Length: 158
Length: 158
DNA sequence: CAGCATCCACGTAGATACTG
DNA sequence: CAGTATCTACGTGGATGCTG
Image (cartoon, rainbow over all chains, first blue to last red; front, side, top):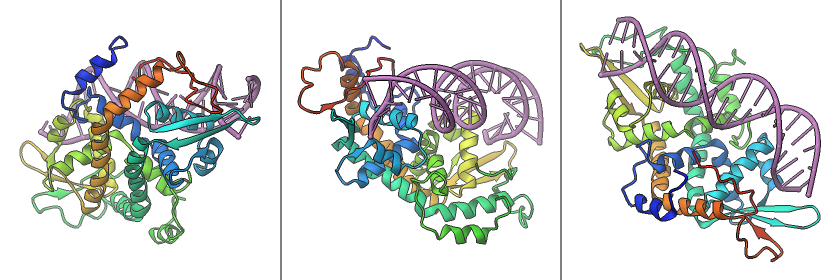
């Protein structure tokens, strides 16, 4: 695995991709970008509208993220060509992060997902309440098929 | 916290949401939908084009997913109102999953992300090679600012 | 068929402390 | 300022075995 060359990998790449297949590299990529921190970092950078953001800017914007996760996320995104990291060796070191065109194309999608979450949180919350309160008053369960016969865990979503 | 009513929560919900804030419920929701399995399950259901899929259909489509993860993902999505679970009490029990309108709206976004992964995997792979081979032949590092001065971990992406 | 229960291992996030 | 290093702990996910 560590000995495959770029050419080999690209050759194999021509074989139609299917993220549904676990062994497909796109599956791993999907796993990487399907990450809360990735969504937020990329969305934050996208909101900067082409401009770059400093490490601390991001840390402030993503209130609550640990330096470790921020650096880790940033590094993985840099490695994947989603963003570029620019170090300015001034006295207090300055590091800027900026989306690449590739990153910008992804940013639109991830921002949309983030916006979806903000937009539909109430519907989801109501659905959760309905689900959790379920198993108590079915009022109908003889129509040949029943919907949502869950065990109804009452624990908070955490 | 466990005693808040739906009305209270909805009242609080009017306070502008910001997924960047860790304590915001949308942050948690984003975390939930930013999941590889969620993307794949929802995308698979979306590809069914409004039709329902059986448990085993999904298990086949998402080759490699463990029954545990499949059930777990399905349950969480059902709870969130993304899909509906229909049990048909035939001799061999039959369970169908179908997207709700809410789920369909999300499916478009997640499918787009999945498609993005399939579409840009090669670019990402090339960026990764470039990054990993870096730290060896900078050839320029005096232009005032340098890009990508990473430590260059050579370990495989896993 | 469609799960659920249990066990276990690994990764990963988080807190904390230190550095160029 | 912008990280890095280390340690710990919990969650996540896989394998296995059993059930209606």
